[in-house]
Amino acid sequence: MLTDAAALEAYAWDNTGVRMRPQAAALAVDAAGVAAALACCAQHNVPVTPRGAGTGNVGGALALHGGVILSTQRMTRIVDVDPADRVAVVEPGVINATLQQAAGEHGLFWPPAPSSARACSIGGNLAMGAAGPNSLRYGGARNWTLSLEAALADGSLIHTGSRAAKDVAGFDLTSLLVGSEGTLGIITRATLKLAPKPTHERLMRAAFASVDAAAQAVSAIMASGEAPGALEIMDAACLDLLREAGMAIPEGARALLLAQAAGDAQSCALQADALRDQLLAHNPLELFVAADEQEAKRAWEARYKLSPALKKLSPKRVNEDIVVPVSQLPALFDGVAQIAARWELPCANFGHAGDGNIHVNFLVDPADPAQTEKIAPALDQLFALVTRLEGSLTGEHGVGAMKRDYLTWQTGVPAWDWQRRIKQLFDPNGILNPGKIFSEDPRPRPHSVV
Image (tube, rainbow, N blue to C red):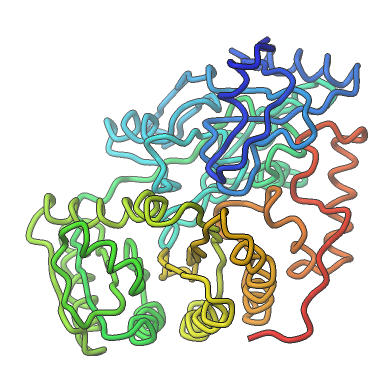
């Protein structure tokens, strides 16, 4: 148990940049340690904040109510990788990229792979419902989790699901725990479903004169048949950053698509031909086809470096991962542009266009009160726009502390209340990750939206 102020500083932050130092940190090494720590905290009614690698974007690992940070970072065993059953059994502290490497030795992979895969942990991925570019074809963390072991608020351990590929025995507690953000229990072991790695990939980069033209191309591609391996979008602000980094992009380009075909040799070639024809049909300014794996890797590296580059561009960025139906992407980008212009907030947008999951980044200076006061009304209008387009407030980051005041806008009060009742059933004293997902004072919905 850590109580020294200097040591606790390492557990006071996440990717939001907000710092909240806990009163103590417990570093568990196994499930028994997690259970014992929870039992002790339950006895004394001490708040517990579960923590993985601390890479989250919504304050999920912040100790809002003080108490104890319960870290799973030392629980790093890959218990089993079984190519016959196509499963991996892991502890929550395993880094995503480490699992991918272990599975890759058998020609397999775990599809949820965020851009932070080299740093984020499997426990955090499961708690927050992580995804990534592969989600277009494969779906997110819920789709690739077979069973869980989890410690509950009273220190008891439960097991959900099974190792079998099909399982409809009783309620689906596995899916309930995945994405519950540590508010129902702390995952101590996971049995994950693995997929065969595509043997061939072909990446294309298409530049467009407007983000609307790029969004129209995305909608057409997704309506035409089988989903590609990945389909990413970057807007004009992102392209300016890439130009500064030395990437050759046509001067008139205001949006860029990365489209990747994937599969065996034959299916990849057929998909690549179809993708190229679909992109050309929307009159791109340029269509670049990566000649080899190294060229493709450089293009993906540029995409993955956008988040760090945005941090350098602005002292603070408000990063939202909203989702809309793919057919609504043009309306979303138009609405976001109107909101950014109305509140005079610089904005950069990129993300997983193929499934409508866009990262909207408002860039602000925390030292400028006039600018920071614009964030709340801009977010009000953004989330109102998303719900009007029948979308979701989050596709892979979770709700956490940052979006809890808006959750009823999407769910409605009755469904939100039933979720809160489930929380109370699992955690009657409210010690597990308090202050996350559920707000006691939801924000009123604005009367006018874009």
